[in-house]
Each structure stands twice: as C-alpha cells, then as structure tokens.
Image 1: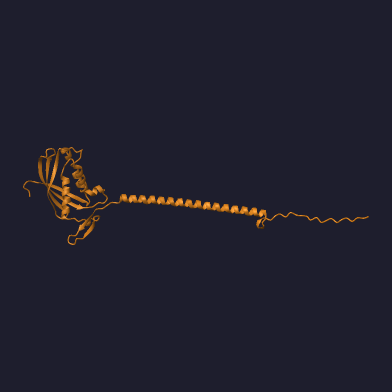
Image 2: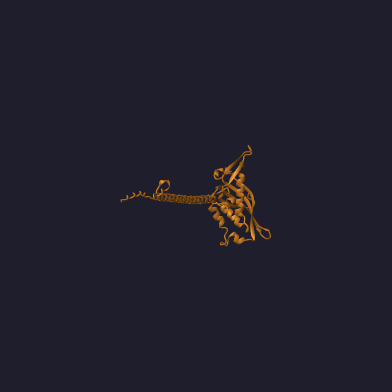
Length: 256
C-alpha cells in the first residue's frame, strides 16, 4: 500500500533588515557628518581666537604709539615753555584822548625815550658807577656791567678786585664808603648827557665826612634791549640802557 508523502511547507526565510539611521542616512554617513561639523566648529573657534588675538595686538600697538606721541608732545611743550622768554612792554596813555596802547619793546624804535626816562637811567648808572659801599658793591658792579659796553666796563672793573692791592675795595674795605650825590642831569637829546655830582668820603663807623669833591661826567648812551638775557638781568635793565662812552672831569671850586 502506497502512502503519499505530505508535501513540505515552504519555510520562509526571515532576513534581518538593518534599521535605517535617522533621516534615512547610514551610520557611516552620520559619523562622517558629525566629524565634519566638529572640524568646522573647531576651525571657526580657532579663527575667532586668532582674530581676537590680532585685534588685541593691534590695540596694544596703537596704545604704545599714542603713549610715545604723548611723551613727544609733552617733551616739546616743556622745551618750548623753558625756552620761551617774556619780553617787556609798556602801556602808554594818551592824555588828550584817554586811550591806551601797548608798546612792544622788542623793536628798539618803539622805546619811548623822553627826558624823564633818560634822566632816570643816567642817574641810576652814575650812582652805581661812582658810589662805593662794601655791602652793596656786588649789586653796583653787576648793574654797571649790564649797562656798559665792554670797553667802558673794563675800565670800571680795573678799579676793583681782590688781587689788585691798589683797588678801591682793598683800600677802603668796610671802613670807608663813598657817597655820590647827584646835582643835575642834563640830556641833550642826541644820546649825550652831562651829569654833575659830588663824591663824599665818609667813615663807616663814625659817619664823619673826610673828603668832598665835585665832578662832571659826560656820558654817551643808547637803548639796546636784549632778549637773550636772564630774567634777573632783565629786571635790572629791561630797556637795554647802554653807556657807550664815559668821561669824568673834576670841577674846581669857582668853576661854573
């Protein structure tokens, strides 16, 4: 007896299908994408840091340049302030109109030379030149030096000096003094003036007069303001009064 074999059922093969990655990409593609995003972000960060470093370096360079410029400007300002010299000026009043004007004395032609001013400087110069006092000798000596041309001052300076045994200061020292009394100052308007004065030799301690003589000085003078002098010198002779010639003659009794 023949039996029929039952047909075998078809066995379906179940294949494992890998799950798809998000967005339909494979895992390898996703890894590549993540690596790309990380590298791009890293490069961007490096660029930003480099840019900031460059900006910081530029800022420091600009700051250093500004500091150098500030130091240069400050130095120039100090030099200008030190070298800057003040110059004398006079405010002149017009008595008829009541108006005033400032006269710049840097130009010698602007110096208002009149008889009163001439008399003042001639009187001051003669007193300094002919007086002697141990206590004020240095001031008189400096004034005569500022108000004389070199030749006139040299003759005056030869009368003094510690090395000269016959000098006035070695003879009189602080025991005697010479007092100069101005009697008249007559400028002729042409840069020449006549000054009459009396010189008295007086004992310093007793104040007794020991000798008296009358003299007449013929003085040539002009005004030459100099702006290279120090401020202390300008205070003594601001208008540049300068004696160009000096001659003295003794006046005998009875001589007009």
